[in-house]
Image (tube, rainbow, N blue to C red; front, side, top):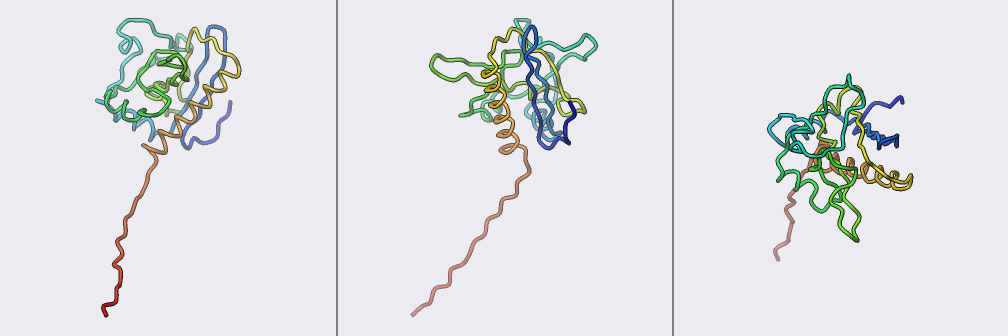
Length: 172
């Protein structure tokens, strides 16, 4: 699919046999922000899951292995605090932290993928996803809102000014 010039980013979810294909690209500023949340090193999915189960897989055998920017858990918690997403569930499902009676958090950890701002962005399979069309549409919409929030609140350049006015009072 041809994409317009990336300003902040794009996301595509496609249901396929075996799961959901996630494709995304973000601006270099957003990837640089994610890289800056830690020590500047990138690690594999297996490193983050400590050899346990993970559900993210490269699309082809020729694709380079997925690597993710290390990040301080304190900073990740600060960014996602009071939001309905997590950046701390690399290798997990599309939704995370599900509690009965509450809408599960969206897993936005893929934003930490090394190379997400490169020409073609990233593309990988999230396996074992069972989701209706309406459910997938809801997940996509919440992911886009999360991307917008992170970009506008933490990445987008902002200039703030303060002006102090001296009030003129007449002395009688």
